[in-house]
Image 1 (cartoon, rainbow, N blue to C red):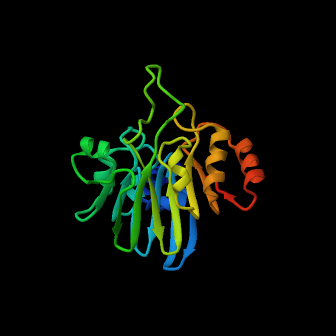
Image 2: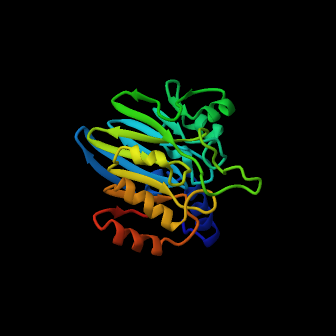
Image 3: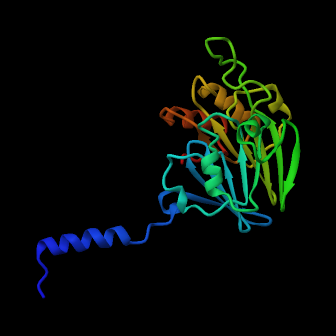
Length: 245
């Protein structure tokens, strides 16, 4: 039987709709870092939504919608939420990614809105499986709303340190340079935001990067070109690898 053009078009449309979807990770860059206890896989899903895979554990930070087909992502073993703003906290996405034994850790302000999960206050620490987790301060000092209230008041949000084997990861959350950073651990990998007026400008970002001196640096939560920032980091921290994802 000879297939006419209309029949070919119909078959193309039908088969296209039932073809298997590509794995979510095929649309994102997956980085792999070796640790003393196995490989750590890292994927920036979007904005400040990160995915880590470590020894079969699936870990998410600030999972939110509108960053792709997140139904393709594996169910979470651990979810961390930095603060309660809608570009970081989505109860619908948390529930979508959760299974019966998923552990959710967030700041106290988040727990009040979610009505589930466990909270860590700034300075508190815990463990999950073989992971060490510490919540640290994340807030504004310089950038204020028109009513003089900080965009991120002190005590309402968390940054997190996660230890995977011999590698330490710092997730800043939404913060500026703050005095507490003088006492932070030195991370191997750091996720630092740069978006005015909510977090940092380039110069403050570089100040934070110099204080922490990570081996790998992910600029995140940005809404501008990063060429100038990358050049400044190359000068200030020539041994640091900047990863734009």
